[in-house]
Amino acid sequence: MNRALQAELLRLFGYACLGSLLAAPFDAPLVGLCLGLLGFIWHHLWYAAALLRWLDAPKKYELPDGVGVWRDIYTGSYDRWKQGKKRKRQLRAIVSEFRASTAALPDAAVVLDADGCISWFNEAATSLLELEGSRDRGIRISHLIRHPEFAAYLASDDTDKTGIEIAGPAESGRILWIRVIAYGQGQKLLIARDVTKMKQLEQSRRDFVANASHELRTPLTVLRGYLDMMAQEAESDDVAVQAGDKRHDDGLAPWHAPLQEMRRQASRMQKIIADLLKLANLEASSRHASDELVDIPALIGASLEEAMVLSDGQHELVAHVDETLNLRGNQAELHSIISNLLSNALRYTPPQGKIEIYWENRRNGALLRVCDTGIGIAPTDLPRLTERFYRADTARSRETGGTGLGLAIVKHALERHEGQLKIHSQLGQGSEFACQFPSARTLTRDALAKAG
Image 1 (cartoon, rainbow, N blue to C red):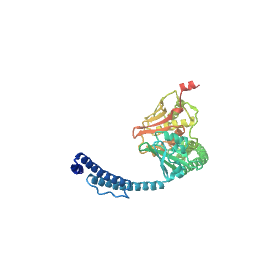
Image 2 (spheres, rainbow, N blue to C red; image 1 turned 135 degrees about the horizontal axis):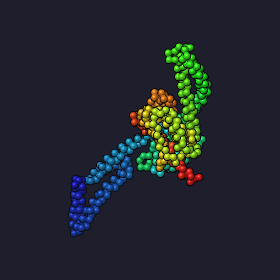
Image 3 (cartoon, rainbow, N blue to C red; image 1 turned 120 degrees about the horizontal axis):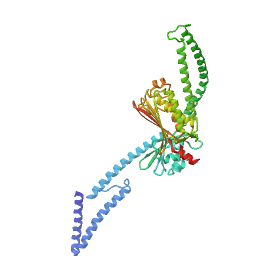
Image 4 (cartoon, rainbow, N blue to C red; image 1 turned 180 degrees about the vertical axis):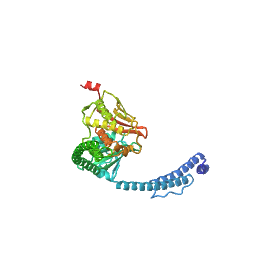
């Protein structure tokens, strides 16, 4: 037993004995015992009152020295009070530093509770989201940012991984990127960033690429026409050389090889310009593609015929197609997706390799897959494959006529069809390019017959 408690029991016994002795001359020991106990209780009540008075105003009153167990209580309470003051100072310093750092942030930061109500926000949120502390604190964020895409994003379970872009408050002319991150017990942190200038730069870049491509197309067409005329003359010279009118080691006119290389490079430039214009049109188009009914099995068949011509019998091409499954969208863009994926597989699959295309009906929509047994892609290259002009194997892509724009076109065309591109690959073991289309755009023949 604690020594302080032992001393307190002895003090209780002493109060009881004292009361009994004082009442002995009056022949009332029980009354004396009660008086002693009352004295003991008064002793504790006095120290308890002193403790309560000090707890209410520790800076105004001082704790008495205390005796017995109260000395330990006072000492422990005072030590904890000092620790609490120290911890409060530390927390105050942390909060001050946090507020100073968040005030310096150019991005808006808003803390939301489990119900989506605003608990706190920094100064940037005042300008970017037009929030006011006295007016908006405690109000649901969805009541202040009235945007359908934001409401759907806030209600989704995938807010931690992605963000969305929405128009800023009225008349601000801003474009905001918003991401919501869950933490704690149902709390969320909303981050908003002004991406207006970045979007304007992207638009300027797209306009420049589109305009430059348009301007280059005409002179390149003229140049290609003259090269074709010169090629016809070169063929006449080749005949003359072979007849003995001119002498050349390989039996061809001396300008035959340079001319053929010029024609090849001109053709490659025309293809790059065509892809740049196609990409510019995709980026400039509305967010979602049209809803015309597209016969995907027939489109896959046509794309496979094109791929067989490119392969020239060097690859095994196999199709696994659900003939009853169709899609709503833009036929030209969907054909571009399929043909680019097939040509990309041909480009990176050595001769005698196998390329398979799958068109399947899944629970969450339609899935288009192109699998090959090619050289594969390094993990470091996977995140950048859909960037313009990015090539995992630059030398091989240029050798086979690649422009570096095919997968960028696939990505943008998929986005217009509300689809997603997923790439799986291992070096030396081939690659798989999977295009997931939402169920809202898929349509089977049975459903089409019922609708008809």
